[in-house]
Image 1 (cartoon, one colour):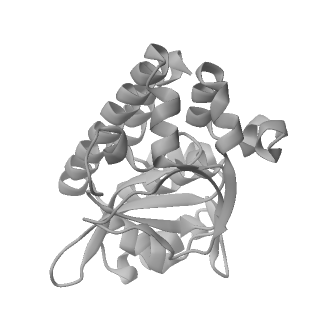
Image 2 (cartoon, one colour):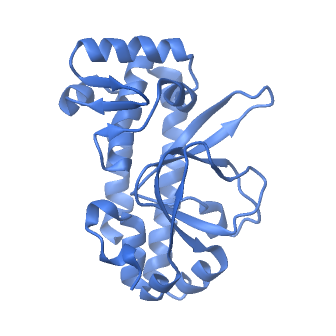
Length: 239
C-alpha cells in the first residue's frame, strides 16, 4: 500500500482524500515527492504532465511581469492542488507554480488522473467547485492588494500559510513573504519586527513561528475569513 494512504490526517491533503473516497483507483498512482524551496513545478505557457497535491509545505501560484517583478495570487497547501488548468482542459499552464516552503508533494500523472476521476460525477463536481474557489481566491487577493495595508495583508498571508502547511512553524523568510505579497522586503521586515515586539510571532533563521494566532487573526483583513468561508461552502461539503 502507498505510504501516503496510511498517514494521519494532518499529514495528508484534504482535496486528494476527498477524491480518493470517490475514485479509490487513484491510490495506486500516487508518488511522494520532496522539492526544495524555489523549485518551479510549472512555467507559464508550459506543459502540465502531473497534478500536485501538497501534503506539507506551500506552493505559490505566481504572476510575473516583463520587468521581472512578481507576486503571488494564490497559495496552495493541504487544502488543494495545482494544475487546475489541466482539469479545465487547457493545453498549457496559465501561471508559474513554485515550491514556496519545503514539504511533501503527492504527484499523479495528469492523463491517468483525468481518466480516473472523469467517470465520477461527485469527483467532477468537487474539482469544479475547487476550481471556482481558486478563481475567487485570486480575485480576493487583487482586492486585498488594492485596499488593505501591508500589515493587514501580511497577517492574512501568515494565517493562510499556517492553515495550508498545518503548522505554526513556517519555513518562510522575509524575502519569500515580500515576493508573495509583491511589496518591498523592508516593508515586510518592519511589520514582522512590530509583530515580534508584540509577542505575536517569533523570528528565527529562515523561519517564522506564530505564537498568538488569535491576535494575528484580529490584525488581519476581512479577506482571510472571506476565503475560508468560501472553501467551507464550496469544497468542504463534497470532501
